Image (tube, rainbow, N blue to C red; front, side, top):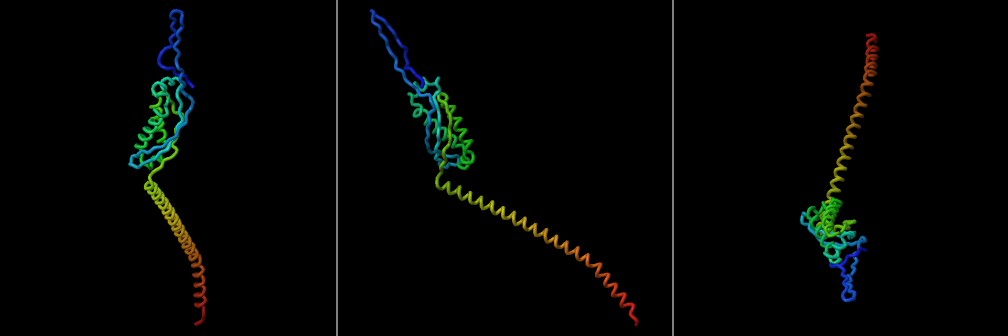
Length: 210
C-alpha cells in the first residue's frame, strides 16, 4: 500500500500562545497485483461478431500512486482499466479476420498487450499479465468453420487415397514387368535345348536307309 496525500501542505501556526495544527487525511492506494477478467463483443476485419473473454493482472506503480488517486479517484479498475481493455480488444480485433484471430491468437494477444501497456503506463499502471481466455463466434460462422474443416479433411483423405492408388498401380506395373522379363529369360533358356533336340531327330532320320 502506498500513501497519497490530499493537495495542500500541513500548517502549524501559533497565535497568542495557542497552537493551531491543521491535519491532512492519509489516503491509501493499493500497489499490489490486482486481478480482473471481463468479456465483450467486437467486429473482426471480415465483419464477424467476436465475443472475447480476457483476463488481466496489473498493479499501480508506487511512484504513480498520487496520479492514480488524483486523476482516477483511486478507482483505476473502473476509470481506466476496463475502458482501456475494451478499446484495445476492439482495435486489434478489427485488424484480423475471424479465422486469423484463431490461427494467430498469440500475435493478437501481443498486440493487445502492447496497446494496454502504452496507455496504462501514462496513468502509473503496469500490466503484469494478459491472456485471451476464449473467442466465441456466431453459430453460422462456427458451422461454416466446421464445414470447411470437414471439406479439408475429406480433401486430404482423397489425396492420400490417390497417392496410395498411384503407388499400388506403379507396384503392379513393376511386378508385371518383372514377371514378363522372367518369362522371357525362361523362354530364351528353353530355345537352345529345343534346337538341339530338333537337330538330333533330323540326323537320325537322315541316316535311315532308303
